[in-house]
Image (tube, rainbow, N blue to C red; front, side, top):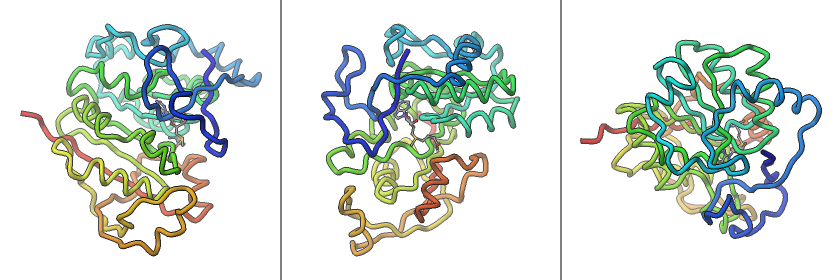
Length: 283
Ligand SMILES: C[S@@+](CC[C@H](N)C(=O)[O-])C[C@H]1O[C@@H](n2cnc3c(N)ncnc32)[C@H](O)[C@@H]1O
C-alpha cells in the first residue's frame, strides 16, 4: 500500500478530491502516493507481516472488509490472548503506542494510522524492541469502529488529531458525533476515551461534540476558560477577544509520551488540552 498524509501546510484539495475507494465520504486525512526511504522500506519488509493485520477490503483500500466483525475471537487470533485492548487512533510515527506497549506487556494495543511513513516508523520502533502485544491497522479509523463488537475496547486514545484549521474544513475533524457514538459503543462500560489537542479551537470543538452526549461523561478535574465562538486559520488571533466560558478538562495523561507533534505545539507556545471521557453503560 502506498499512502502518505498530506502536510497540513499544503493547500488541501476539496473533500470530493479525497476519496477512499468507491465510497465517497468526508475524510479526516488526504490520500497521496508516497515513498519510503531505505531505512523505512527495510523496516516495512522486515516487520509488516508480524505487525500489520489484514482487515482491509483490498490491499489498496483503507476501508475494512464489509463482513468483518472485530470481536474477542479477532483479538485471540491476532494477539494470542484475551488481554484488555487499547486502541490509538492516528498514531503518527508510533512513538506513543510503542512506548505504552513496551511499558504494559499485560495489555494489547492496536495502532490505527493511514500513512505509510508513520506506519513504517512504528514498525521500526516495535520491531527493534520485539514487541508482541502491538498490532497495526492501516485503516480509516472510524471505519473499523463500525465493525467492532460492543464493549470490546478498554480505552481509546486520540492524541493531536489533525487540526483542519480552516472553517470550511472543520467538518473533516475526526472527532464528530457519529464517530463518538461508534467509539462509545465499542468501549467497555466505564472505559475511557482520552484525547489531547494543542489547538484551542479544536478543544472547543471537542467540548461541543462530547460534553453533552448521553453516552459519555467528562471526568476531568481542571477548569479551563475557552472562547465560545469558532475561529479559522486566518482568524485564530481574534479568539482572545471573543466571549469565554469555563469547561472541564484533564491533567496531562501520564501514559502519554512527548511526541514530535506535541513538542512542536509547546515550542510554538500553544497550551495542551487533555480530555478524559468515560463511556456510560448502555441499558
Ligand atoms: C497530527 S498527527 C498526530 C500523530 C500522533 N498522535 C502524535 O501525537 O504524534 C495525526 C495523525 O492522525 C492520522 N489520521 C488522520 N485521520 C485518520 C484516520 N481517519 N484514520 C487513521 N489515522 C488518521 C494522520 O495520518 C496523522 O498521522
